[in-house]
Picture 1 (tube, rainbow, N blue to C red):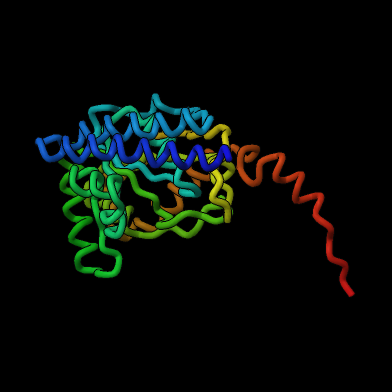
Picture 2: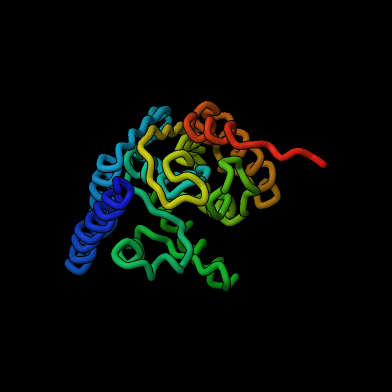
Length: 255
C-alpha cells in the first residue's frame, strides 16, 4: 500500500510542478526557472519517499566555469542526486524520445534544459552535439551519462563517445561524479521505490583543453577511473535485507 501512495504522490507532484514549468516557459521562463522547478519537484518526491542524499566534493566546482559533468547511471534517482546537490544551473543531454513524456519531457525540451539527441539519426545527433558544444562555450553546464543507459547491476558499462566529443569540442573540463546506493532505491525488476540513502561524490575536474580527437580513448579511461574511484561499495548491490533474502533461497544441487 505504501508503494502505491508513493507513486500517487509522484504523479501529483509531477502534474503540479510540470504545469508550473510549462506555464513559465510560455511566459518566457528558461533554464533558471526550469532548474528551480526541477529542484522543488524532485525535493518533494525525495522527502515523500524517505530518501536521504549525501554529497561530497562540492568544493571542486567553479561556479563561473562551464563544464561537462559525467556520471554513472543505475537508477532514475541518479538524476535526483545531481539536481538536488549541483551548485549550478544545468542542462541534460537526453534522447529525443523523452520529449514526448507528459509534463517532465515537455518542460525538458521546451525550456532548453534538455539537449535532445536523435540517436537513430547520426547526422542530427552530431548537429545536436555541435550546438551543445557552442552552448557550453557560452557558459552552460551539461550533464552526460556516458554509459548511455542505466546499468542493470550497478557496475559501469562501456562508455559511449558522444559526451567526450562534446567536451573536446567545447574545450571545457569534465567533472566526474559517482552515484552510490540509488540501485537500492529502485531495485532491478521492481516498481517499488524504497527509502534509503544515496551518496554522490564529485571528483576533481579533468581538463580537456589542448586535447584532440585522438586523445578521446585516453580521456575515457581517465574519466572511468575517476568515477570508479568514487564508489561507496557498501552502498552498492542489494540492500542488507534483500541480500539476506537471497541467501535464504534454496540452492539447486547439481545432478
